[in-house]
Amino acid sequence: MGKSRNARRGRAAAETVVEDVDGGRAELIPDRDRTRAWTLLIDGAPQSHVDLDDPTHLSFEYQRRLGHVIDLAAPPGRPVQAVHLGGGALTLARYLAATRPRSTQQVAERDAALVQLVRRELPLDPGARIRVRSTDARAGLAKMPDGWADLIVADVFSGARTPAHLTSAEFLDEVRRALVPGGVYAANLADGPPLAHLRGQIATAAARFAELALVADPAVLRGKRFGNAVLVASDRPLPVAELTRRAASDPQPARVEHGRALADFTGGAAPVTDAAAVDSPAPPPSVFR
View: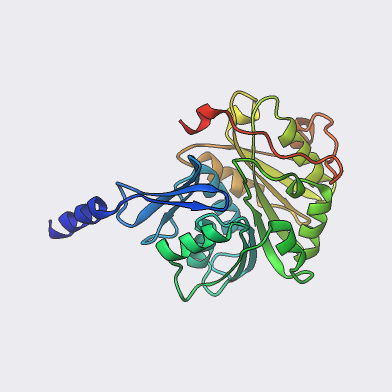
C-alpha cells in the first residue's frame, strides 16, 4: 500500500514542462499511469513517449513497429552499431540500449534546444553508449564512415512533415554508403489519401535496396485515413514472417506488405530525386485531437 501511495504522490507532483525550442513549443506531459513516463509534444503534435523506469516500453504504435525492426535486425541481445536520424526524446535509442547492451549509437537531431531539454528533464543512462549530435540528419549521415552502421532508423519530422531532402534517392545513397553490407534501414513515414507520398517513397527505396517491407495499419494502406507506415529495407532477405507475426499481435494490429503485393501497391510511382523532392504531406488537424 505504501508503494502505491508514493507512486500516486510522484504522479501528482509531476508537472508539465513547457519550453520553446528551435522547432516550436515543446511540452513534456507526465503520464498519469506510469510514474516516471512523459510524452513529448512539439506545437501540439505528439513526438515521443519515454518511460525512464522502463525504456523497453514503447507507447506509440509506430515506435513499437520500429522496435520490432530493432529486435529482428540481429540475433537477440547482440550489440549493434546504430544511427538514428531524428532524436525526439531518444525513445528508440533508449530502447535499443536496454535490449542490446553494449551497442554503440549515434543520433542526429537538428534541434539543439530540444536536445538540451531532453538531456535535462529526461536524462540518459550514463552507461548507454549514445552520442547525440545537434545536426541536420542528412549532414550528420554524410559524416558517418562507410559501412559503419548495422542499422539506420529515420524518424525525422519538422512541423509534422518529413523534410524533402530526406525523401530522395540521393539521400538513400548516403544511407547505403553508411550501412554495412546487409544492414537494415527503417523509416517512419506519414501519409494519407491518395498516398502519393508513400507510394513514391516505396518506389525510391526499391530503386536502391533489393528487399523491402512495409508495416502499417490496414486502414492507412487502403487510403482511409492519415497515419504512419514503417518502411524496412535491406540487401539481404528480411524476417518478413516474424515481422508479420509481431505486427498482427500488436495492441493496434498492422499488416506487412512485401514482394509483389508491395510492388503493386506503388502503382507505377517513380523514384524521387533531390530535384523533385517535396516535404511529406501535412497531417489534417483532426489527427492530433
